[in-house]
Image (cartoon, rainbow, N blue to C red; front, side):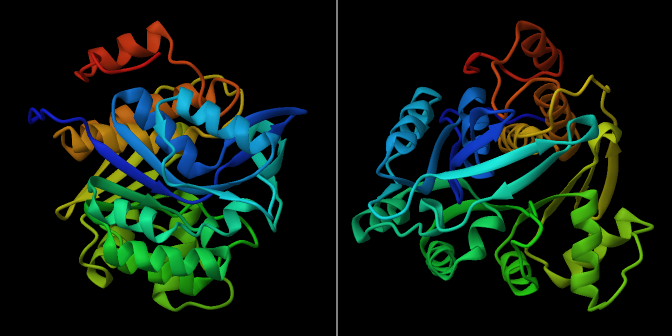
Amino acid sequence: MKKDHLKPIKALTFGEALFDIIKGSAHLGGAPLNLAAHLAKLGAKSAVITAVGRDELGKSLLARAEAMGIDTSYVVIDKKRPTGTVTVELQAEGIPVFTINKGVAWDAITPSEKEFEAISDGEWDVFCFGTLAQRTEENRKTLERLFLEIKAKYFFYDVNLRTGNYKKEWILSSLEHTTILKLNEEEANTISCLISGISGTCKPLTSYKAFCRLVTEKYPEISVICISRGPKGAAVYHKDVYEEVETTPAEIADTVGAGDAFSAGFLYTFLSGYGVSKAASIACILGTYVASKAGAVPDYSKELMEELKAQGLKLSLIKT
């Protein structure tokens, strides 16, 4: 059952903010920024901790983020490094292959003491983080401090693995700080092998329910696990109950940002007081919608809003 809440949901995300270059066009990107944007569109108050360069792309990123309703108070302006860019090549069915440039601003997310103080003084419903931004020591140190100082009801870890940009110890450390875990099927296989201590060739998972039990036994602070399954929908695990939720297939434009929309739909619905099954249904609707459109944060159509309304989600705060 939904619980009425008077205050908007407050969400804080940490990590990469960049421009995805898709077919020669620049699209605002980076999972933490996409997630903050979709949460803002749904009516949450979202803020992002990241870094941009003192360049034209940085100015554009800040202006566009603010226009989408994201609080940019905790964005570091880096005088030495450029704003991040990623070249995206689309394969069959819109599946993206990323070339992620290094030595960019979001590789050094180092808030000032004043910014750390403001962050730690805030009361957040959820703090969201991933794996990619942990590729530098500066960011890992910042994240460790945030874990210690942030007051949040939930810590949401979107695993979001990118080839060549993760290590076992970063993932295992992240799981120690997680209360809501989100991953896709491939990432579930990877993590299953990591926490089982299997080296070499790892067999594909035969049971997501067994995987969820394995994770929650090893990391008891994790209360919710959400596995996105593309056109097959999603699987959720909460209080020893495993459920699978179907989705309506759609023609794919590109899947960039679809996972972030999925995460936003799940978090917003769950934090609004709905159960995990309903949250997963909303997540699938939003994820599928974004996959059917170009770019990570497309406008929300009237048809989408009608579909969300039919699911029982209040639309008074949603921004199209």
